[in-house]
Image (cartoon, rainbow, N blue to C red; front, side, top):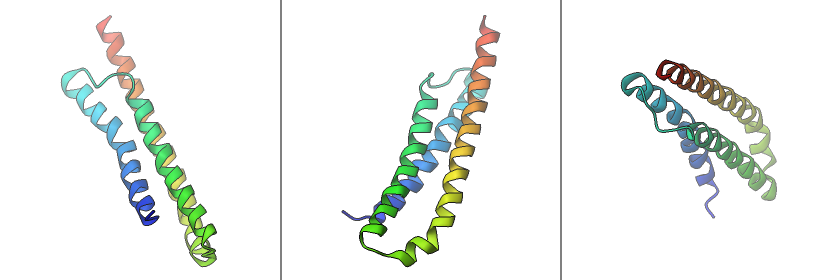
Length: 107
């Protein structure tokens, strides 16, 4: 397995975790309807998988005993993972609030 692909996968999944609710917000503003109620699950799932890819990559570094790479990157990985998690959660909360407001307008 090419473990470097875990980093690429982590980036792409993290971007998907942000893109899904942002696209949903755009559709809600433009068309007053989105993709459905499962976008939050997809978004948070993509975020979780992005963080899992980083954990798995760190496990690989442990397996090959590349302690220098772990020491050099662990602080940045920790900060980026927290940032990804918090921002994904905030964007999903905004999306949920907008969906709730549109539901109230329809009734």
